[in-house]
Image 1 (cartoon, rainbow, N blue to C red):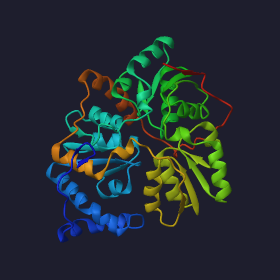
Image 2 (cartoon, rainbow, N blue to C red):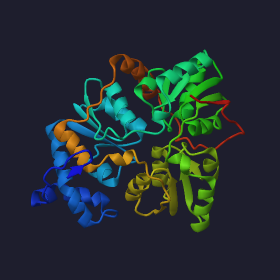
Image 3 (tube, rainbow, N blue to C red):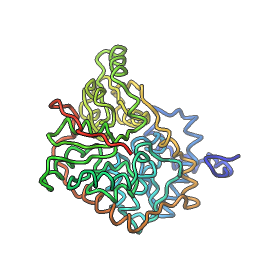
Length: 365
């Protein structure tokens, strides 16, 4: 029977050896995954972890991965900025990107000598597909002399046309840094229009952006937040800055996935809701058993293309290998490296508007 685009192998057996290799991993997820379900996953998990050793491989697991991937096979876990840094620093020869395709490209850009695998070529991104390198070139023609900051949720050809990359965790810092470096009060911040609006509310720089959006975060509304509060008195609302500004205005705290995770760990609210992708709540909940989570989240269909089964297939067959044109990779590497080299300072950004500011333009293709 076909499974995830490849022929299924003979099922692996749940042996005493498999239990010995995986029981300690089950302790990490026991509060969420029933033992019967875990026993179905355990042979695959054991085989993946054995292959990582055999092939000198690591798995980079994004916060939106399901807990079985995140905690049982992920070697490095976090948001896109953390994973970009780990991709550059690891001594492993093989990198398996448990995330979406642009993340795998970024890993390849920073580590061209390594083999980078993506378990599913269908693991794309609505935001990344909203803009091309040609679009960026037209923007630069339209706004000559204005620096371009590109969100890492983009393809390599888009990064290659930019001056510096950013993530949601450092976007405000990057915008202010590049404007100071260039001696300008204008910046092009692409492609997420909501991240751009929320950054614009945190700075006095004039922001030009693009009509792109994350299909997961764009679906949340201010009314959703009000309904959550009505049904859960006292709940603390944490939102991702890819959400529309009116959603952030209803939240108690807004920041990147790592910032939200850090908030829960530090503040230990009695009751919390994370306005982001579903699996993020599961992963943070497992690390904070004393916190009650409300879960009205949205699933990312692209992230959910990554499964234990196709991670195993990727390691067994060394597919699908990610390649980036060397000329594009060299240009993109400069923009990503400038971001990675930028020292972070101060606490995690809380995207709370300080003034009635907005982007000055939202460009369309």
